[in-house]
Image (cartoon, rainbow, N blue to C red):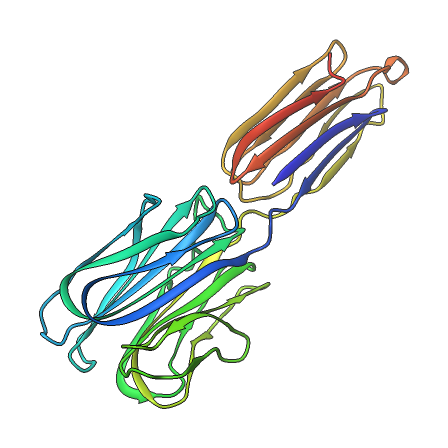
Length: 320
């Protein structure tokens, strides 16, 4: 978010420029047979992405397995969700991880290591324009999950979201090699791999909160599956406010809402003007001016740039 605060001829203006929109930023997938680790190489175009990693492993030996991710850019991985589908033939494990990439990734090799050996799949993709401080929609029902031994050519799970602007995505790990996988209406495929057990991801970017949204895939034949549905939140929202000072001695206060974290932005003082701007969790902007309009002889502009809830630069123009 970029905030512009200016004072011109007794008029106080506060403007905000919206953060970049949510978008897919690179993807990769792979499925292989009989391994104890699986790797894929991801490149992205933007800094400050949320990186999603989805790993699947067969468990034909019916022994418990675990996984841990590792990548060549040394990202910090967080486990978002895991499940063991004991009812699917031989059993299947799935893991959803995420990380924050402060820089664009160039040929970042990401690996899922397993404690057992079997057929495996991996999906990795980046999401730009996301809230890197609190990446996921706050709905307590997320992530959604469904597993079934009953085969279906339209595997799906229903979820609800709290945010208007979300990057909703589905992660699927299927039973039978060679499936043809496509996205249902309203969704777009991210990536898929079907050489061994099929693994896939798709997404939809929303503009309103969803209730009972079906997230899944369309297959060329019925198959058993494990399916995760989740939602990444957009970073912030625009704030625009204007206050006009109309008396020789006046106090004016204006407020607006955003999703920024608590940060004191700046304080600028002159002999005739005091400007204070404070962002809290709901963004409260306070402008106070006590001055004689007949003696106002200068203009003062404060430019503050906020990236992911943090002040990254402050510039004062014409302020004594």
